[in-house]
Image 1 (spheres, helix red, strand yellow):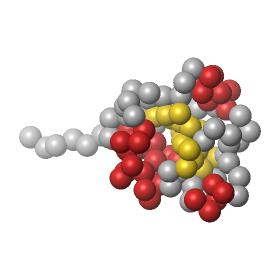
Image 2 (cartoon, one colour; image 1 turned 120 degrees about the vertical axis):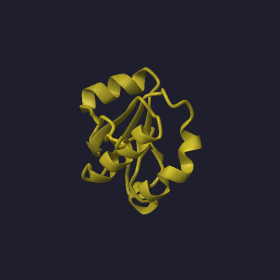
Image 3 (tube, one colour; image 1 turned 90 degrees about the horizontal axis):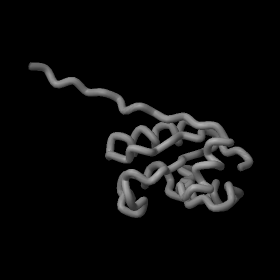
Image 4 (cartoon, one colour; image 1 turned 135 degrees about the horizontal axis):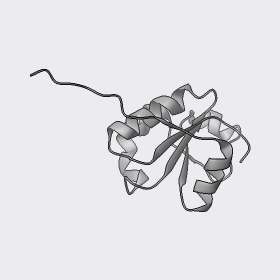
Length: 101
């Protein structure tokens, strides 16, 4: 029997839904570089660059806690959300590009 690999469902959310989840206790992760983060970020976000994300999963806490990722264009946050979903973070969502929340 062949092994079937499935890409986990990627949850893309709107700014409005992200704000609601944040008000309910979600965490917000900026997956851009530390330099980009220092140049400006969404208030309340933590910076975990995409290339460090896999090694820092323990910092994210409970795997069922809503976790919202964003970046500059949406590509790194999509990849980060995919990584988290594969690691069992069932409520990881991609906000995409940095927006005003």
